[in-house]
Length: 162
Image 1 (tube, rainbow, N blue to C red):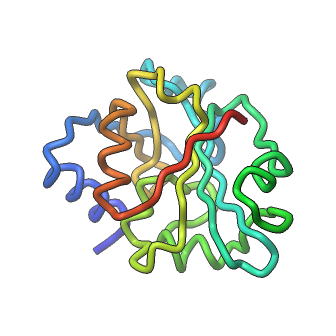
Image 2 (image 1 turned 90 degrees about the vertical axis):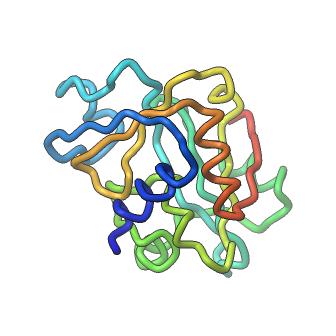
């Protein structure tokens, strides 16, 4: 199965309501705006980071226009210096590639090596937009449903004020 099929099947199995849209490829979160692919939802960016020794992986989800303070996060989670994880890890851990990364990909992290780190502000959002493993589609769901999905994958969730 593809990442997209796995993600949508789990959402359906959990009874999570979501909207599903198709659109031209979106390479970055900011690219959604000119093509009107926002769908009245919070647009986010997703970043996979790890210390150099890859002893831990953190999948960050934060509003598209917010910066990730990796030094502050490093101090909070008690790891070494954080950096973007190598591209090969996106495919290995999430079955996704750069430009298609979304937190729903944790369904493929069978060894639970990734912790999802949500920006605190997302808790207040009723609609979150994200790729379901491909950058030509968007799903929109509530933050509480997204949190339920992530937990159903056995993934630890952290909240952080970026």
